[in-house]
Image (cartoon, rainbow over all chains, first blue to last red; front, side, top):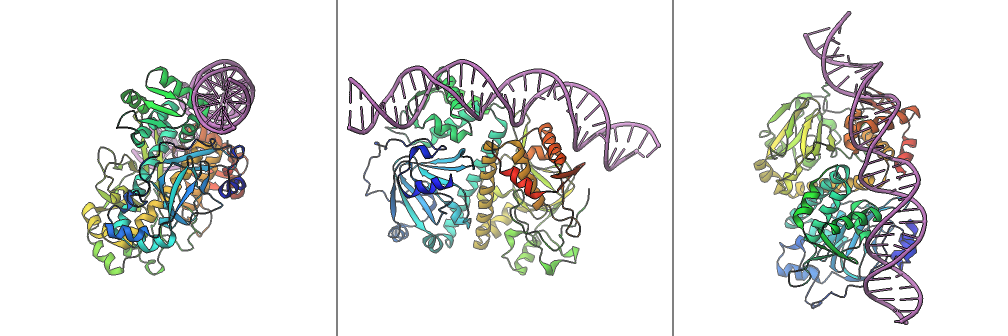
Amino acid sequence: MKDECAVGLAGTPAAGERPWSPQKREVDVLTTGDPEAFTCLNDVDLFADLSVAELESMQLMVPERRFRAGELVFSQSEPVTSLFILRSGRVRIFRITEDGKALTMAILEPGAVFGEMLLVGQRMYDNYAEAIEESVICQLTVDDVERHLIADARIAVRISRLLGEQVARLEERLTDLALRPLSARTAKTLLTLADASRPSMLGQAPAIRITHEQLAGLLGATREATSKTMAEFAAEGLIRQSRGRITVRDRNRLGTIARRSS
Amino acid sequence: MKDECAVGLAGTPAAGERPWSPQKREVDVLTTGDPEAFTCLNDVDLFADLSVAELESMQLMVPERRFRAGELVFSQSEPVTSLFILRSGRVRIFRITEDGKALTMAILEPGAVFGEMLLVGQRMYDNYAEAIEESVICQLTVDDVERHLIADARIAVRISRLLGEQVARLEERLTDLALRPLSARTAKTLLTLADASRPSMLGQAPAIRITHEQLAGLLGATREATSKTMAEFAAEGLIRQSRGRITVRDRNRLGTIARRSS
DNA sequence: TCCGCTCTGCAACCCAGAACACACAAGGAC
DNA sequence: GTCCTTGTGTGTTCTGGGTTGCAGAGCGGA
C-alpha cells in the first residue's frame, strides 16, 4: 500500500492501484480569471496582517508547482518539508489504514493552507494529500517558514487561531461520528460543503462539486450507504443531484436532520 | 479518593504520547521535596519558558478552587471565562448530544491545562468539564491571559505546539473510530492510558484507574460492549482487572490488536 | 456489621450500516 | 456514432455493536 503511494507521488497514478481513492476527475474547466494577478500569498488568511511590502518580499521565494488530478502532494513515505498553499484546484487530505481503507480529513479549496503541522514542529504526520483536480500549489520551505513565520508574533496568533478552529471542528466531527447516525452526518456535511464552495456564478446556484464516493470518505461510511442516504434526501426534495454535483434545496430541513441523534 | 501528591516521583515514563493529557512536564528536580513549594504554574508545560521571577509575579494572581467529585467545572450554560490548570485530582472533558449521550474528549491528569480554546478567541465552546475525583483547579482569568500570555511570544509558541498535538491526536482518534473495530480502539486506548498514568509506586504496577463506563465514554461505545471486550482481553491474559483498576500485562499483543482494522 | 450504591458480567434481541454483487447511465475520447 | 471509464441505484446477506434487563460482587459508609 505504502509503496503504491510512493509510486503515485513520483509519476502518473495508476488508477487501479489506489483502492482508497476515487478515480481521477476531469480537469476543472471553470478555472477562470487572470492567473498572473492572483498570487499565492494574497488571499491567505494566515498572512492577512502583513503589509504589501512584506508580502512582496516573500513572494519572490515562493515557487509553485502543478499537480495533476490524482497526484499525491505528500505522503507518509515523503514527509512534509514545506508549507503548502493551494492556489487553484482542489486537494483532499486523508489517512489510510494498513488494509487500504481511507478517511478524508478535509477537502481544500483555493486559498487553503496545508501541511500546517510543520509550523508546530510535528514532523511525523501520517496524512496524505492528493490533488483531486488539476491543481497549482505553492510551497514555502521550512527555511522560509522559520525565518518569516515562526518569529512573527502576528503570524503566530493566526496560526493558533487556525489550529484552534481545527480542534473545534475535529472535536465536533468526532462526537458526530460517535453519536449520530449516517443521515445526520450527511446532512451536516452537505450544509458545510455548501457554505465552503464558492458561489460558482453570480452568487446563485451554489452546486457542490463532489461525488458520492468522496462524500463517503468524508463521512466515514461506504459509498453505498451514502448513495442511499442521498437518494432519500433527493426524494424528499432536500437536495438535487446530478453526476458529481449536488445542490442544496432546503437548508432548514437538512439542518433539522443534522441535529438528530441515534 | 486518593489525594495523590501532584508532585510525581522521579523516573518519569519515556512519555511517548499522552493523548488525553497535555504533556505534564517532567518534574523539576529542584522543586521536588517541598510540597508547599508546588504551585499551579510550576509544572505546566505552557509556562516552561518563563523565568522563576516571572512565574512568581503571576503566581499571586492565580486563585484556586476545590471541586468535589462529580462537580462541573464548566459547561455550555456557563461559558468558559478563564483558563484552567488542574493541580490535583482528575477532570473529564466531554460533549453531549441533545438526548444525553456523551463522548469523552479527554481525561486530564494533574498539570494539564484546559479551557485552552479561550486562548484562541473561541468563546463559544460546547465542551463540558467535570471533576471525576475531588480536584483542585487554578484559574487564570481572561485578563491574566491577555496580559501575560497572548502577548508573550514564548508562550504563543507553546500554545501552538499544544494545539498542534491536539489536532494530531484528534485526527488519529477520528480515523480509528471510523475504521477500526472496538477491540482495536480499546487496546490502543489502554496502552495510551497506561503511558499516561504516572507510575503509582516505586515505578512498578502501573494500574490504570478507570471504570469500564468511563472507558466506554472515551471509546465511543456502550459500557456493555466495552465490558465484553475487556473480559476477552482479561481471559487472554492481556490485562488484569479489578474494580475500577486495570493493569496492562502484555503490551505487545495489545499493540498488535490495536493495529487491526475492520 | 449490614446496607446501599457503584461496578461488572451476562444473555437475548434488534438494527444500522458494511460487504458483495450487479445493472445501468452519463460523459469523454476517439 | 461507439467505446470505455467513472458515477450512481438497488438488493441481499451478514455482523458488530446497540438496547434492554437483570444478577451478582466489591466497596464505602453508618
